[in-house]
Structures are given as structure tokens and as C-alpha cells.
Image (cartoon, rainbow, N blue to C red; front, side):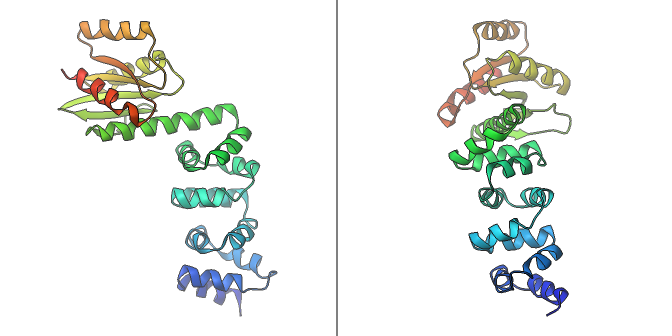
Length: 247
């Protein structure tokens, strides 16, 4: 059967049956077929393939093609795909992905794969990935506090805007920080975005001088606060910090 006809059949057939067509091909014909498949084709087919066939197909793809797939796939499917690659190869793929995608993939990976991936990532890249993960988790916690959370076009990097009780509050979530960086970033963002208040969120207890600075700022009529958040056990602290800014 001509390869063009086979590709047309694969594209017009449900994924599981299309995968069956690929699996039934002679081994020397599979690379020819894969070369004709687009990223969209592979996104549709790979989740339906057995682990063995997935590995064979991915072994025929370049690093750039794998990165295109990881960007195009739903996060769970991308993680399942990357989990089949050696850690070093996952690292080369991650180098070609936007930081939010890397953070989402790391979060969804099993702990042992996280360790493997982090062990071969550049320290700066790993730190940025985890920073993005923390920021996303804090944003989810803010949403659980019944606040409206958004990232306006004019928001500085890593800043979300919270609307609650008619107030706009800029929130800077910073990992591995005692509040010094987060307070500065949240306050600067509030000034630039003309928000009503600023909130710093960190995974460490805010330093005493940071808390004193926030207290003095509030006395001067600049509503700023700092709070520690690590996981959903601290959602209550986060909600109380938000409410304290609007009262």
C-alpha cells in the first residue's frame, strides 16, 4: 500500500484502530510512516499506543519533535510520554519548553522522576521551574478562598491580581524567600497596576523586619501584608491575610 494512502487511512481511523495499523506494519516501514505524521497526528495516536509501541515511535522522533509533542499534549499525556524517556533526554526536551510547561510537568511527575529530571537540569532552570509551580499552587489556593484570580496583560512576571470585596490586591508568591523579595515585588506591582493593596506569599515564615515593615506601611495607609503558605493546610492563613487587607 502506498505510504500516502496508509497515512490517509490512519488519519481517518479512530486512534486505537490507527495504532493497530501502525503496529501491524513491517518494522522497516514504521520510520517511513512516522516521518509523514504531523504533531497533531502523534498527539492523537500516542496515548492509544501500547508502552512498547510508544517507545518505538518516540525513538524515531527528534528532540524538537518531542518538545512539540509535550507542548501540544494535555499535561497528563505529556507526562506519560516523558516518563518513558531517560532523564537526560527529558532534560534536553525540557530545555526547549516554556517554563510554565516544565513546572506543570514536574509537578505531575512521580517523585522518582522528578528527582531524575532535577538531577540533570541546570540549577537555575530547576529553581525557575519550582518557582513557577509554587506560584501556580498559590494562585489555586487564592481561588479556593473565593477570590477572583487573574493575570492581567500588564502584570509583572510572577504576579497575580486578586479581586475580593471590591478590592484589587497584587500577590507575589516567592519560593525560598523570607518575604524580602516577595514584599518588594508585590508592592512594586501594586504601584504599577494601581491596585488597592499588596500581599507577599512565601514558603518560609516572613522575617521579623519584613513583618515590621508591613505593619508600618499599613499605619501609613499602604495596605501590605506577608504570609507563609506551603500547602492547603495553610489556606486559612492565606484567606485571613487577604481579608485583613480590606478591613
